[in-house]
Length: 220
Picture (cartoon, rainbow, N blue to C red):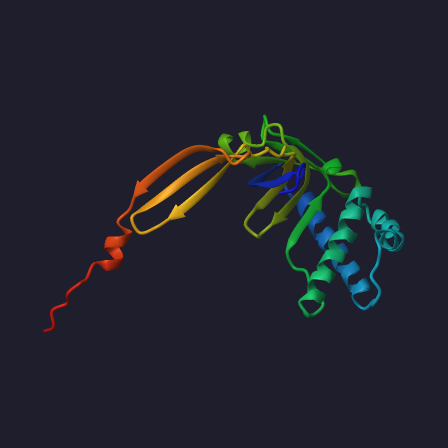
């Protein structure tokens, strides 16, 4: 790991909509159809489209459909990644069926104390969900920074994956361990960085007996 590179992990939980789920399902269907529309548009293009070109081609149309600004960006970025993945695998043009959406951190409010999530949807609507997860799992992410999340519907219910990250400070090594394995023992030696021996420990092993022991099999 390079110094300063963040660690990224996801908290995946079941989510229960409060006050009905019609608007959330409507949003997920609209989101999927918008991604599919962009996939269809760019599939036949040979040139690689930059973010600026994608923005110019699709941003206004997506906003006119009721999406928020960050929704629009997530949609065309996601569509581009789907096309790139399908082409690299020499596959056919993808046809999306699953209901899922990536949501930017500016379009949701996460409350880990009360285990609630408020999503900003299309046309100014909102959806509030109660997250189902153990306190032990949630406590791990105290002090981490959350950014995007993925919400999906699998036919039986809603699931949310919230992505967290935190910076990790690299620790400078103070010692070096050397391991020597032979027939009779395993020797562990710990050296300081200036090659000084700090500790030596030897553990006896039965390796020689295992290698030289003969097993007699009586023929019947």
